[in-house]
Image (spheres, rainbow, N blue to C red):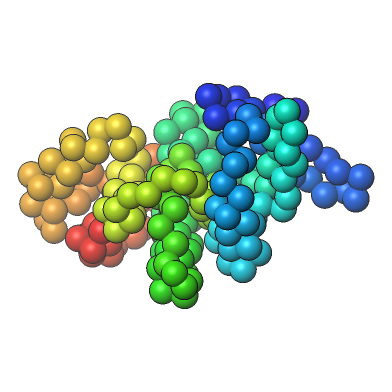
Length: 205
């Protein structure tokens, strides 16, 4: 079963003889040349449960990477796909906490610190219990800025393609008094949460 296909390769859902289900990504062999990076991904996934685990790889004419299967796919789909049931606020807050825990581990408990991280809804996966996990990549960026933008995306439900517009809305909204203007209303339970909590999150982000 094909899960997704793109320029970086095709990912399949596969069931192995031992009964385990995995996500197998087929890539060009030259994409597997950085052994040290792949080994670090494999190790870190075993050490921290908020990182997608790389269980194995195979090299040949084509390369194959075997990851844990993430039942609920990418976070991006739950924020922007109208066919998906919107995530409630409790789940969104827990996702933010999950990602913060992973970043804390990579930055403060790894020696040297790990910077090969892309913090975006496209690179965050959700397991069967909606536990959030980061798929490590070769991209390097400003992690604090990326995490702040992720928090905004969780709160507003708007794509980061409109990043400048989101920031502008916050700056113009007199945030503490009119947070309701930018909070995503899709979950439907937004009035049961204290907006001031989200105000603190955005200011920290």
